[in-house]
Length: 232
Image (cartoon, rainbow, N blue to C red; front, top):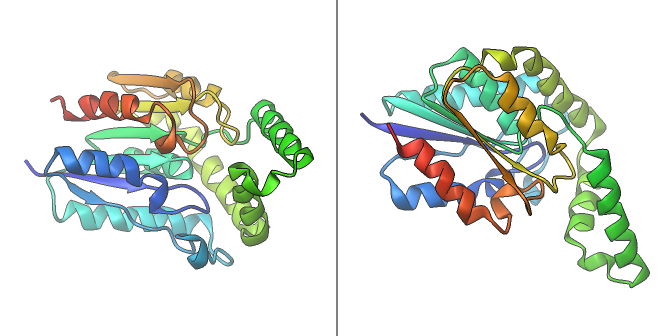
């Protein structure tokens, strides 16, 4: 049986967000890896999101799934942030062997963590170190380059999928960072409690922020998730 893994990145991001985990799997298996780029997304210089809607990104994922299905016998889907929501959408509509949800944006924007992040940015501003603050650079870029219309479409993806989360029944591994300032950390437990999968596991990363593939403990959860995917 030939296995394929479909990786889905997040809103206003690109394949780089999940590349570390994709590389980890690629080094340890002969599985076919597919990492499509959603319409209007990609590297910073390629970002052109205006005019794209929720349906475009969901169709991008469906087409990527169908392309991969022509090459392999079974498909694992890994989704990060918005990609995690779309991964659940695929798991409900198509045959998915196993599902991995990374910082899946079934709920979005954690006010508590956002306040902490803003406080850190304010401290850096006081010490004239704001330009060195990675979080500030990311938010500054997104405020300038991501149109409000695209953000509304992202919320539409979440709203379209949320009522059907309980229909996910394939084996699922959930990874959620406790320091996530975009997706409330309680979302991981919410998903774990609401999906119908009999075989499911959750890893709460003590140090993980939203970009979980770059967390301090990523090697630890990479291994746990890989073992979950590899076992029959």
